[in-house]
Image (cartoon, rainbow, N blue to C red; front, top):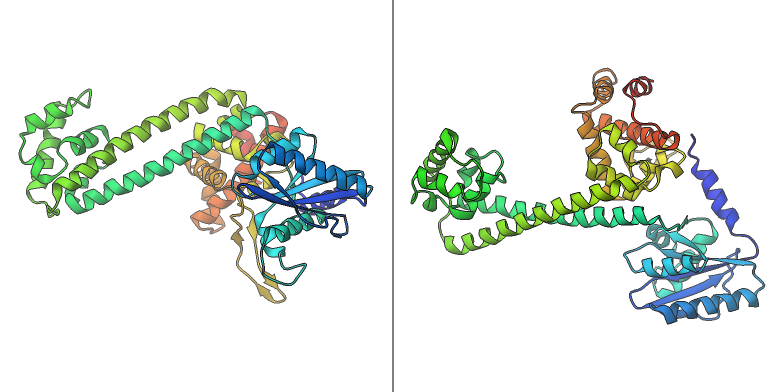
Length: 425
């Protein structure tokens, strides 16, 4: 397998022939602007094509493009647009449904080429449309190909799940803050403050003063409303430990009732979000078997959320020729600034999908806890090659990416023997 960005770039340039009309669209929320050029960059529109973000506007755009194509004797055309935000989804899908080739231009490419024509930092919709068209004519684009329905579904679910995971993290931070102020000794009793017993405590008697008004037996009885097995020696000991901590607490007691009101709503929101995340996980598990290669990724030891994220944002791994392409999608490819005798520091570009990057990292982190092949490679990197643990992790992510693409292309599940051979190579 080989990954050659130069050959890919050349193929995209060759797509733009002398008889190709290149359209650039600057996407907005309600009104879009389009400009047309030929393969040499000569502007063919006397004025920008302005059209609305609805069916009538899309049809007006297509009519204008067909008219320009006929006027200048072009055989075909390609439409380029920026892949920013979500406003481009509908226009791109509609154009593809009409059989029109769509090219996506990276917003960073547009930003860094906006001064090419007029040597001015000025910015407006018609100018941006020309910059996008110029980028397409030089091959600085990615062909847009809508994914299959199953891939779209899994992507939507993974994105939605991540929204609630982030929201859950914010709620948890607020609860931690509340305890730091009101009951800083609380964590001495609970290693996990979001366990069932801890949440029951925070619901009913979160402040030290609340705990001191109850007996250990009463606390155990209240825990029984939220837990299956609240009592026993362990439950009574935990109640006594909490009361001991409460007697010597240095927590703030001013405006306590108002702060308890906030904590009550934070916990209710946290529990609600946890149910939503569980529901999302169930939906993902139902759809995942419909995705090609999902069973292959799972055979490595990846979790269900990680497998879903890799497929949602990495796409059909069978269509990739090399694991480096998956790394580029995640922004895990390396970048270095060097000039003459100067050699800059090598860093990750991080120009890719952050969710894919996150789950590739977590998958390797998870594999290091039980996968013997990855453990051996990690030990070799850190002990023999003297890499830092993070450097070794990054290298193992690259190994994992290449392994996943190879498994998908060959249709083979994970083999510990083959992994040990390849990792030792």
